Every structure is written in structure tokens, then in C-alpha cells.
Length: 453
Length: 89
Image (cartoon, rainbow over all chains, first blue to last red; front, side, top):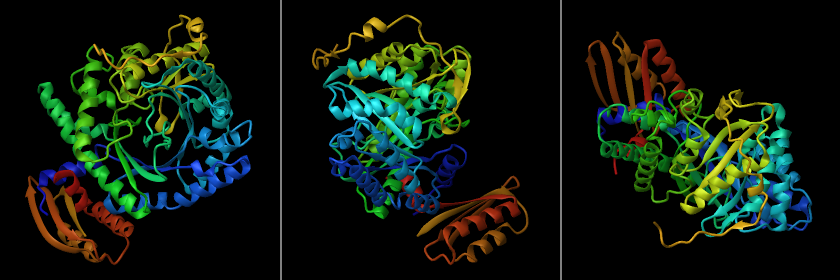
């Protein structure tokens, strides 16, 4: 097959200078058959099963990366929400389950394992209650385990008891990991409309509707999209959208190749490709810079929400055409500390929490990696969660909150989490009280599904 | 199993000799070569067969890396399947 010099050069530049990568190959593993009346026995089954299925995950990922010359950054595992598996036991705490997951992650060599999770959008089971209570200790004592709690859905409405509780869980978790700036909170996502096949951490879990075991692949590449827009300075939005779509298509095709190859070599069914523009703190790997490339002085300027809406939609359209199974979150992530362009916008005073909230109406997830003052009351955090959940539930989309109330820090202080999590300024949060609102508890009913105006 | 090797850099004596030597020593069969010089810049694109390597892929990559440094050029080997996925429907 013959390729033009321009095609070859385009692909090489994507890898060499635009930081295109396969962000993660995530193996989803069902643990439903590991439930047992004995907690110890359940944990043994969990450990054995994860290690058996994922034994070759890391080595296969590395081999594909080497052979095809495609950087594959992370190999990860997602499991059945642990509340569903652990609740058959009479254990009163699931911290030991988190330690088992951590040990399995170490043994298989993955850097994160997601699924210390509960789905409580309509109500709690006994196991859900125990799991959520266990989160602060579990995440403080483990390294690689990620947790998530789904508190709302378009079909079920919002479980405000859970929303309230998660505010307190965040505070407790930040307190327990105070010597690491509350880093534990970076491993906990509070969702509405969470998806069952998301390969990205910290919110990945293997949903109850998934098969026995599956390979999902998450792609990234903000730098590639930004570069594609660099030559379009005065072009109309039609051209901008079309260019993003075409580029997203190419990236996703590359991801599909990796996913199919991983699936074949591991003898595990291929699930989905998730093309999400997931920034890293590295220069040239920023979603904020894409929005700037469209003509905004900085993210946060009026027009930011529209720019993000166009980007998110065009990425999805390109991805959907490129793979027969697109899933997960697929769109643009707008974390703050993980994106140097976002950090710069916050530092310049041009990007507030409220503008970010507006932008989450059209991005693929929600308020992500945002450091807030350590003395933010639990009910205020719950208020943020409630607002995000409402946006998701009403608009039929996934929303999430991953905020870190950094112990001892106030607005404007600089917090450094390190690595892919980055660092950034602590953002001010409204000091108006939400306590009486949050303390009501109960459920916000599911929204009406007709009369859409 | 076909791949594309590109070599880009400032022209000098011995680039083709050096690169092809590194390839043949690793069992890479060269299928076609196209090469030009544009304003002192050397550009070469080769189609190669890497289906019968005499070394593992890591060693081949390392050799190309070392050779590229010595010659002052950038050598990239890219799997044809990747290009096919991206540029052909």
C-alpha cells in the first residue's frame, strides 16, 4: 500500500511532537462470581480472578506499543462495583477488600484499579452503605485503588442522602490524606449517569451489564487537535468542526487497531474505544489551548462554553465514524490541575469555578481535579455535587465531581499533586451556606422525559 | 509485515549507507526507497519488510536510534498498519 509523504509525516508528527498516545488499555473484569458469605473467601477469589485474567495485560500492552511504535501510557483494571460483591459477606467494613484490590493491582503491574464503587442513584443497599463508609480509610491506606459513587441518573433522579454523605466522605478522606494535600480525593469520583464501560480513571468500573471480561481502550490527543487547528486562523466554525472531526477519526482508527490487537492477543473480547481529549500537565497536551486556538484569549472568556461544545461534539462525531463500538465518556475532559492551560487561566483570574460549572454542561464529564480551600464545609461540597448531578440528570449526560478540599490551604495557595495529576491554585468557593438545603436529604425526583423546551 | 522508515536531517556523506547497514544487520528487507534533497535537507522514505527480523524489535529500535544520533538525522520506523488505519478507510 502506498502512502503520500504528507500522510506519513502527519502520523509521525502526531506521535513525535503532538503527544498522541493510547492513554489506557483497561481490562474490565466481572467479580460477581466472587461473592461469598465469608469476606476472607471472597477476597481470595477476587485476588485470584484478577491475577488470572490480567496476568499478561501489562506485557501485552508493552509488546503492542513496541511493535507498532504507538505509546501506550497506562494499563489498568476495572472491576464490578465492590459493594455488589462484598455485601454477600457479613463484614462491617470493606477496607480489607480495598487492600486485596491494591495487592492484585501490584501483582499484575497496573498503576490503577477502579471499582471500589457503589451505585446508589435511587437508594442504598446494606453493602452500599458499608462501602461508602469505608472509602476514606480504604483510599488513605491503599495506593492504586480508585473509588466512585453514582448518586444520580436521568431515570432515577438524585439521591440527596448520598449527595450529602459524599460531602462528608470527601472531607474525611482529605483529612486522612492531609500529609499529601488531600491526594486521596483525586482517587474518588462522584458521578451522575456514570457509564459502565469507561476506561479512564479514577471513575472506571466494570458495570453490572458488562460481560465476564472485556478490553476497553482510552485514547487521548489534545495536542493533535490543537496542531490541526493551527493553520486555520481565520476559518469559519464549519471548517474548525470538520477539521476536528477528521482528526478525531484518524486518532480513533489508531486506537481501534490497538484495541483489536490487544483483544486478540489476550483472547478477551473487545469492548469499546473511548476517544477522550484527556490533558496532562505537559506543555502541548492541553484542552484549554485548543479552545484558545479557536480564538479565545484564555479559557474562561465569554464564548468558552460554545467553543467547548463544538469541540466535544466534533470529537464524538469523528470517533463514532471511526469505530463500530465507541463508548465510555468520549469527548473532552476539562480538569484543572492536569491541564497547564487551565491552570494559567485560573491564575490569571479569568476562570472561575462557576464558569467551569457552566462548561461542564457541554463537556464529557464534569468538575474535575479542582482544588478548593480545606475549610470548605462538607455541605458546600455536597452543594457542588448536587449542582453537577442536576446538570447531568436533566441533560442526559454523565457528570462528575472530583474536587480536593486541600487541608490547611486557602484560595490562591498553590498545591502540587505531582505526576499526571499536576498542580494548580486552590480555587475560591462561594462562602454562602448550602447547609439547610443539603440537610433536607431524600430524593430529587427523576425529571420528566417529554415537554423538552 | 511491512513498515515505513523515514530518515530526515541535514545532508552528509554516508546516511544511506549507515541506515541501510543498520537495517540489514537486523534482518530488515528493503522493498523500495525514495530519497530527495531539499535545501541541504536529506529526506528518505523506505518501505521495508520487518517480518523476518534477526533481532527483537527493541534491538532494532535501539540500533536505529543510535545510528540516527551518529548521523545527525531523525529515523522513524512506523508500522504500515498504523498508517493504513489512519489514512485509508
